[in-house]
Length: 192
Image (cartoon, rainbow, N blue to C red; front, side, top):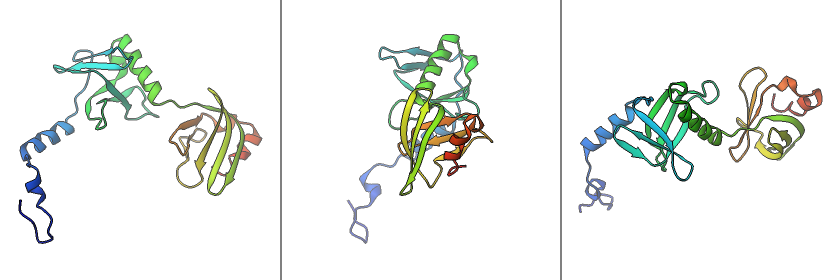
């Protein structure tokens, strides 16, 4: 193995560089494959996860990701391999184009991945040392969480709809800010 001027081995000598394989992989990544009821079969596997058969390949488990989770939750759904690379297998253009049973499996996976309780009551929000400590009631019960005061912890999705993301990445929705009481809205003045 040859050494360069700095005494380190030449990286090209350490591993074979296959330009053709890299080119083919790049083309595959850029290709959009639409998954339809004619070329894809989604099924539930033994562990309750979703599997996929398409293009002569079988995937024992796939991940379901929304391309536009807030604006188009049933369109342009990315289906990916369920490993750490999460390479895209294909895209479902419209969920309604699949069989009813398959639609429900996909919706269930979406609900699990994009779990987002709605905040129905704001009991308290205290600011301390650059963090906001929330005490709220959600559609799934009472909840306490922490957000950072700086950054994008609270995002306006519309004039009245808010998305709150805590320091752990959990998301909460306030569907209509104006449905909260005056006192609750006053507690959120720091964010509005």
